[in-house]
Length: 185
Image 1 (cartoon, one colour):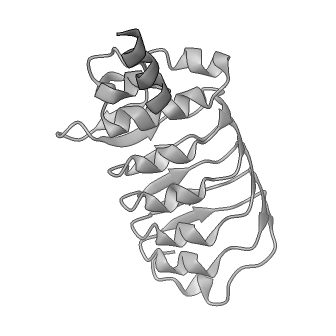
Image 2 (cartoon, helix red, strand yellow):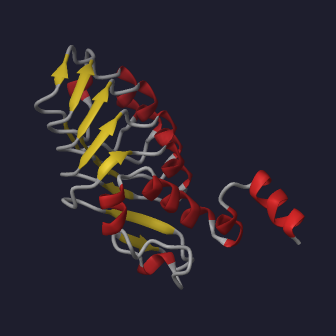
């Protein structure tokens, strides 16, 4: 028995994730990337909870898939783990007014159903990467008061549903030609 448990930990360092849904795993990994104080704020996020749809700041569809992560103004401190991009049904990601640091994960472009990306008033930095143009369902993107230092990628023109983009109080180097010609903006 002890050999089995040892082997289990070698194969999967997080054995409690074996029985969890992919959405639960993604959210628990996101939580682990936060500081201990921030993790305490998300105490309802645990593997023993009946349903991740009852976790604070989550909303689900009728199939128990996470469609909303809504955690504004909680002073969450840490980074956004790339695994958040495995929430394939996510339509709204609202992490505004926290203390999140680092880059926006490149893998965020996997969230093909995402309609609202609200990351304003954090300590995010780096560039606004071109892969965000793959979020073709995006309607609102707010990166106001972060620390981005880049150009607006021309690939964002692929987001034909985009009706609001707020990049104020960043260090935007240039705006792509004809970006203002987008019908929805």
